Length: 77
Ligand code: FES
Image (cartoon, rainbow, N blue to C red):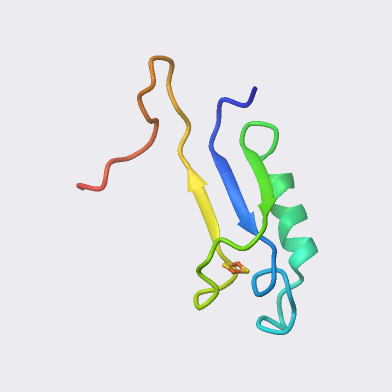
């Protein structure tokens, strides 16, 4: 089991296509994320996350510490 963050990378109808982002090499982007983050963190492609108007979306789920606390910075400061 991975203790780090989980990065969900949308790779569906908009985010994974060159139609909306012709200058983005989506496969290379995913490979680059994996090379930079794994094995400490988990990178997983997903189907549409329902925010196609933004497109090329990634969601970072923070790591959890033992006991359930979320590891990372708070939003204040
Ligand atoms: S395809 Fe990524 S949000 Fe819809």
